[in-house]
Length: 121
Image (tube, rainbow, N blue to C red):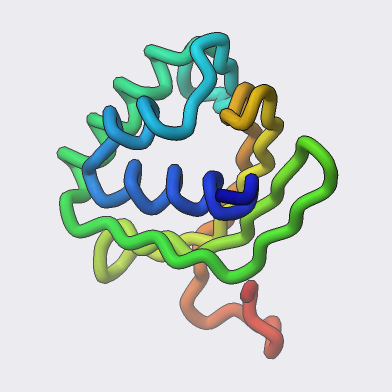
């Protein structure tokens, strides 16, 4: 599996409620992240993802663009938390030994009535 495929598999598994499986298959034991809502270690983000699944059981992740450059992968995707809450999310992954060892993310809510005729996707 390519790094892009691994990153997409991780996001699909985690968003569909299979957080532990996503971590077992895709995340390096020394994983760290840069999500400002959680401590930067592996376990804190995993617990946060598990809580998100409970809060948004119908969450859907759809990858739109995937870029791979050496040990870095960027995924631009749509996340639907609920009918009224849709987001554009960009995840940047760094790989080591075939697993995700570091993660950054940036998100923007889809606004109804945005003046931008191009949309955010």
